[in-house]
Image (cartoon, rainbow, N blue to C red; front, side):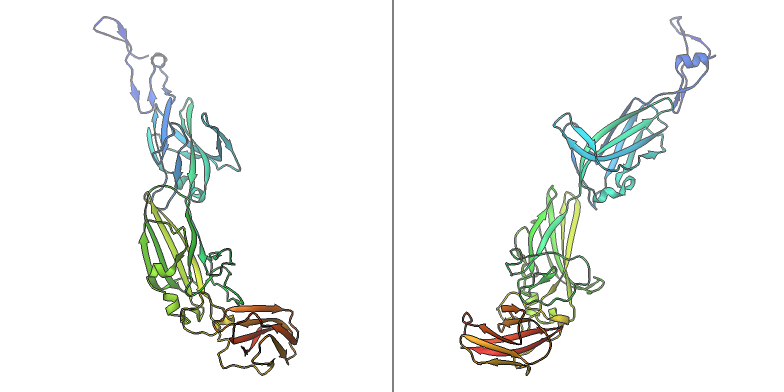
Length: 405
């Protein structure tokens, strides 16, 4: 039994003694038992965002981690953080509907009355999660607990874009990006529409989009040459910075301030040479990045760029396909020169997979499949000049020339 003391007023009082997390109530003092206070309040925020009304949108980025901070009123032994993923609906009061498998709660063995936690350390997979979440913090006391939940929309902003080629039949020039190596060799009989391939002069990006929000303070675009297998940088080619996302067609020439790939053609298209385009966006202190590898499509003639076509026809294994003097004796063309009709006779035994008529810049003018050993084609639509005939036979090519008058 605790001693009774007399106050100055003459009214008897029972002194109240307390120690950390254990407090004596009057009844407890009379009975001589200790009892924990039950926690009676908890407030917290995620990255400083509470929920006074509309559930806030929280962005995840590399530069700023998610921080869960809060304060308890009362005494606690420990607390629990529970996260649910789902869908927020309604317009106040808001309704949260859990969706999918939910992660296990995280127990924090800490009895302090304030906390600050790295939320991504608790739930690392949130680095790539886009959607609605509900966070519940529960203060656990010896005789009970109390919880509070907040709703948030978690967003991981991304940067999207396509490579660009001048071939408008490729989805208006848009070509898919490539983020794995190596980029396989391709045989193009028309404009390079395959992912990762661009022309020496027309190379660029298009359809740029940044799906986040906030004030953009820097947009940096970089072009470098990389190892065709490992992606390790071989040389930096150039970069530029602005505060604008390239949401329209942006040629690499504007990034490099020169037509680098055209001026260095055909060397940039040989020996599996591979390049990398990177874009980084800084918004509200967060850094977001994306990239693509790419290769330069080959010109069949391997002639330096001279202001002609903006894409080049590529050959297999980057070997020289033909030069202007080459005439395969197994192919006979007559009449040569020709005006309206041209006969093409192949004297070999292999099956012909396709026949291509190309101009001196390597651009495909006409393509015929299921070609017979003797084929007659119309050349009325061709302008006067020299043209190439390319027969695809098995895994090889046979090439000759003819003149149109």
